[in-house]
Image (cartoon, rainbow, N blue to C red; front, side, top):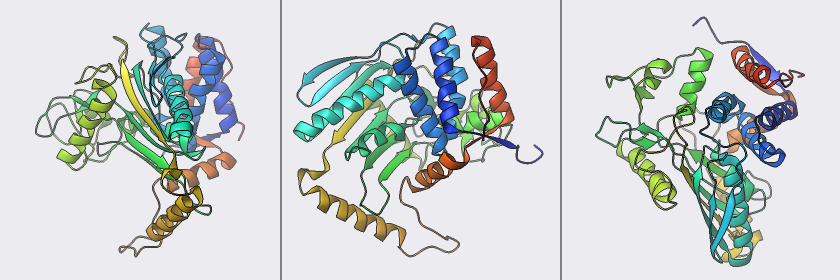
Length: 357
């Protein structure tokens, strides 16, 4: 492949403005466009480029194909004082999930916990940005979603289960990082294979199988009839089924392999989400909770290291450090990614992305 591709840097504010301009030109409201931009750029800032603004071409293709409604507005149905449901009406998953977590937080402020199911939604990007929505206001959270089939059930070879992330978070102590866990039940997120394909890179040989069931380091073969591999064998498979139970079966959205992926232009996604916000000071004062989180953080990062390890990180810490760096230095993209984004800008007759850093 001839070595690592050269990167260009983009300021996060320029990236957000670019995303908003593309979405508005595609018929999305300003408020929803800003919400989508927030989630995508947050992923790029945290180093989760597989869920960043490079997702835009696939989203816009779904709008042009008529399988994603850019004008849809999520609606809320309050079921009990602590339970609600959001209907995404086949619009962007970002505003549907954002409304869901906002509602869960408000319920938790009064009743200690809030639970929201989201139906008829679409891909909502990186789960951690929904987790952060709660953590940033001092709440704990759980964020589940299902997704299009990419994994086999353990022992099978058929695409059946989604690479559906399990995510959760809690505010940290005064001098430590918050706890933010966002992980896929596969060895690697499927978006990382799409990113490798865009960048002309190989993938590790233990990430996926090709159509014949053989390990492959070629992203094209992994995506063309291949399957992702679950982490820990039956453990990863079990987690993927759990995501489908809580996000798909419970919500009334697609499940059991029926979710349509963001790169499939044949029909609506019908994705389901499950969101929970929890007030941390239910059993003790907030000060005591934060103090205990500080103790946990220090105990984890100062624990004895295995050979060859220089530093132990708390879940979400690497991403937070990456975000702090990229807020100053800019977000790195390869030229092929910039070209793909600017191609969308040309189609929609809006300005190209600014590379001002």
